Length: 387
Image (cartoon, rainbow, N blue to C red):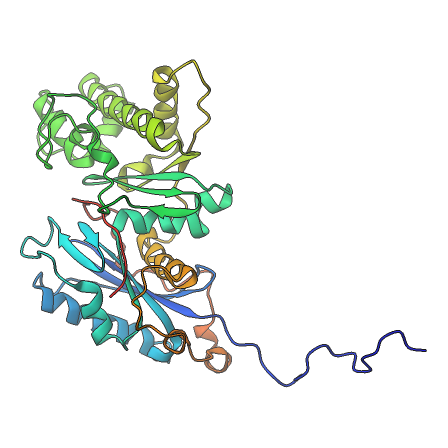
């Protein structure tokens, strides 16, 4: 006798049924001078991305541009809003509950409801707003350096015009009570240089690209030389440049020590323009950290370079914004009560993908037509929910 009571060897009761395609997310990166929109697969792979310079800084103008760019990125792949499960926006400044409380790059913006405004123009899809540094750490946790090393506790440090930080604790984004965790503004030199935030002696006041440029001039160096050139001169042995660079490394190491004592991360992940100096730069921070750390207990933090977008010129923030929306949907967190399960359904894109091979996930997505190697300044931190 046949021990299998089911005479049908095919376990699929409907062999003709096609499995639903995984959902797509729309990631938006709103910077100080540019706006990007990308279609992002559920695997974190970018299908298509477009970039434009900002048409203006007025709130209505920016919302209209995000909508137009989103419509265009969908149209170029023959898709519609029904294919998008959720929208994630990586925005500047302090982002809280779908609102940008304030941002240095948009001085007229005060408590602007960006998430709800974009949602209203973009197919009424669930929309989630997160600060740009938090978006960056989401990307690294989802498909980047933290994912590669299987890390659950990570602090990302973005070294650009400012110094931004984002934190993952226990595999989840950590934002504090007001979404205002700002590691770049820990005091590393009390009573020191005035920081743009108003404090004196912040890490950012010595280690951002802007600060390194200013410090070099203050010490008697050539005025107007950018941070990368100062690092190059230091490498060639110029004493003043070397002194400026060492000061920046000292403050970054102190910042990492202070963050370690509070958050106890497994690793620090570095992104932003200065991180492009690579492993030799990282090794100097690592070495100074080891000199400063306590000795009563071990410190086993890793120092890593961000990996998402490193070769494509596409900021990790745009993938992380989509990842933040994906996480919120999966965990049913920060979603308004009126978002029903039906509202989260997406159309099957498999038919379009078969008809249009270009719409399939591409390991080499359409490149950013005009990549900007300098990340947008991050005046404040940000958290979350959608509109």
